[in-house]
Length: 238
Image (cartoon, rainbow, N blue to C red; front, side):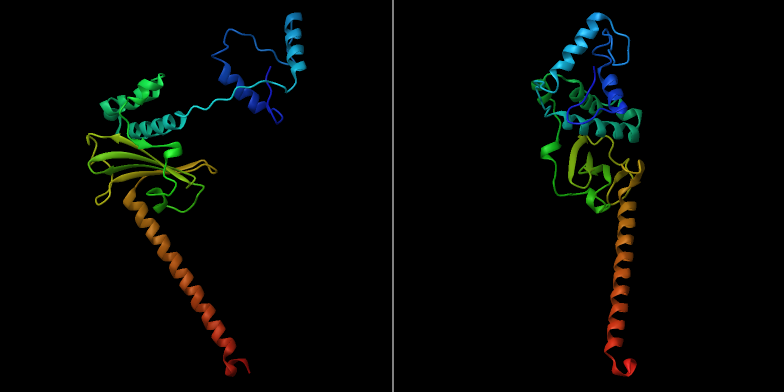
């Protein structure tokens, strides 16, 4: 029996719940309100209905969930950009080991470097220079001091970092000269992804946008000053 707490269940929500529980309860028969039921099943449904919403729930939080999310995103984009060579590399295997390890003590011993979740940067260090729209997500692969790092800026609020290639094996393969890096911009509302674009290309585009905005603002101020001066000139107002 599927339902929700605090809000009405929707067909979409029920479908999501069914899919998420499919593997765990694959040997159990789902009981729906419109399905034909045995006497035993009707008693079970009746008993559940009598419980109402007074359910004793145990809530838990996986404090490594966001760490794993950042690792999965960084691993995915690195494999996408560098190809099969990275996918089969020692660095990629180390990231996968972190994702697959269920023992928290063993997982803590895996040598990963970065910051995610509560430890992420609250002040943008990199992604903010590409855009100012807080509705846009920014994902970057950047070459820093003979290493490759992955940056994930979400909604412009926090920036997460993960060391992708500590050996420098893939250095020199990202686009750019003074600053090597590839960037993906994701608009979650429009469901559009732009990239990969080189960091230098985005910086040039951003610089152009700022210059045009400054020129537009200057022109507006100049027109306002001219109109204000004209209104104070007695020869033009008489």
